[in-house]
Image (cartoon, one colour):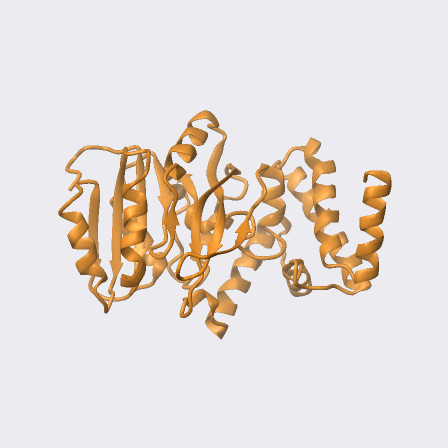
Amino acid sequence: MTGNRSRLVSIVMPVYNTEKYLAEAIESILSQTFADFEFIIVDDGSEDNSAGIIRSYETRDERIRFIQLAENVGEARARNAGLAVARGEFYACQDSDDISLPERLQKQVSFLQSRPEVGAVGVHAHVVSEDLQRQRVLEPPERHAEIMLDHFIGLLSAPYLCGALMMRLCLVLEVGGYDEAMHYSGDCELMTRLLGRTMFANIADFLYLYRRRSGQRTTHDNPKRDRDMLSTRQRRLERIWGEAPLETLERLARIKPWSKLSWRERRAAKRDIIRLIDSMIAAEWVEAGDRPHLIGAMNRRLERVSPRIWQMYCHWRRHRFGR
C-alpha cells in the first residue's frame, strides 16, 4: 500500500472479467519510465480470477491500491470509486485489456507540467488484435481547436482515445466525475462537461496499444448503447447551441471515413459545421485566429464523405493549386 504518501499521478483502472489480459495491462504500468504514481485497480465484481491476479501484484508493489466491489456496478461507478481515493495531481486512465508503452506517463506528465492551460492530453495509439498484432493506427489531432471540432463530428471518441487520457484531477472532480447513469459512453460524457473549461491536446507519439477483441461491450449494437451515445451527442451540442436538432446530430455523426453523404446532406453538414465553428469562437472555446484552420479541417473531413467524383476533383485541385 502507498500509506499516506502522495503521488504525482493517480492511475485508475476498472476491471471486469479480463483475466486473460490483465497481467499485461498491469505490467505495462509497472514498467513505466515514470515511477511517481499510485495505481488504483478497481475490480468491478469480476466472476473470473481477475481479483486473484490483482492481489498477487498488490503484495509485490506498494503503489498498487486494490478496491474490490461486491457486485458489478458498471465502468462509470467503478472509475468514480477509484477517483474517490485518488490523491494525485494528475489522473491517468488505463483499460484492463490494453497496454501503455513505457514512456507514456513520462511524456504526458512532462506535457501537462509545461502547458498549464491544457487540462487533458491524449496520445497516438496502435489498434491491435487480441494477440497484439497491429491492425491500424489512431492519430487524433494535436491542436486544441481541431480537437474541439472533432468533439462534434464523426465518432464520439474521435478527438482522443479515452483509455489513454491523462487529466488534471481537480478538473475531473470539479465537474463531478463520471455520470453513473451512462453505461456505454461515460468517458465521452465526462469530456463533454469539460468543454469550455480547459484546453485539450494529443501527443503525436505512439504510446498505447488499444486491443480490439471479441466480446467487448462497446462493440455490440443494442438500444441502451444507442441511447447513451445519442444522449451524449445531445448534451454536447446543447452546450454550445442551446439546442440539439436530431437531423443535425445524425448528419454530424455520419462524417466518418466509411460513410458517404449526398450532395444535399453535404451542404447541410457544411452549414452545421460553420455554425459550430462560429459558436465556439463566440463562446471563446477556441481563438478567432483558429477559424481558417478549422475551415480547412472541415473541408478535409467533408471531402472524405463526399461522392466519389467530388473527391477526385478535390484531390486534383489540391495537388494542382496547393489548396
